[in-house]
Length: 287
Ligand code: GLN
Image (cartoon, rainbow, N blue to C red):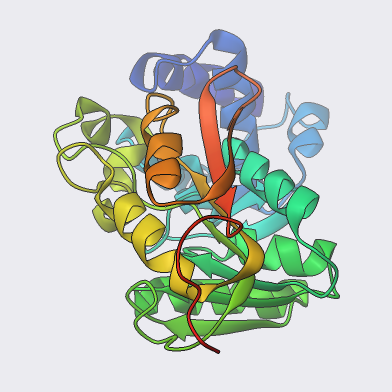
């Protein structure tokens, strides 16, 4: 059997198992096969009439068995691109998503020169590392509740050459008295009973990175409440949230006294990022 025939068969099964279009399934089959064989995807096109050796075939069968069982492509490859850079990912971290690039852009648009930045629930570290690499004048601190996620984030920081302060912390617990110009977070925000949690890639991702209470807003409420004590005058809090939380999150920010509250949509037109700043009415802590 040739590579072409093998991959066509796999693509058909992938299309059915992961509900992909025939084109997406062909691409995914080629990308995974190339990674498994240690070649560039174009090699498989150039060698489409060759036949895999028995060892190659065994390697490909094992890899596609994982994918056909539902495991996310990013976990099989161990890597996912975010903001144009490759990030290591594993089952301890959420897989970086393109819509989170909107949070990065919101931060880049608002952070002042030499900003002190905090990323809450950093996961793979994709937001913190990207901000540090895009703005080397910023000092970036990133925290996560999960030591396993932090190890992945730290590895991404070293691999991509970003100097970030990594902290194991439950929200601000390890940061008494610390003040920032910009606080960003892609927190868990899916309602605990949302059927989305049982579907597709999400099934394999850490539940603590995804779900947050009955309406998905428990962690966001805690951040909105605790951040004022850690924001410099004029500093911004920027939060990613669900498509159906585009009114609730700005409402929470306004109710807590944040100023210049805004909500931004992603490329698909869905509510995605909200924020507000510390020009609001709350009492600044004495520093
Ligand atoms: N956007 C992700 C999803 O719906 C969730 C990410 C998150 O909870 N922070 O799959």
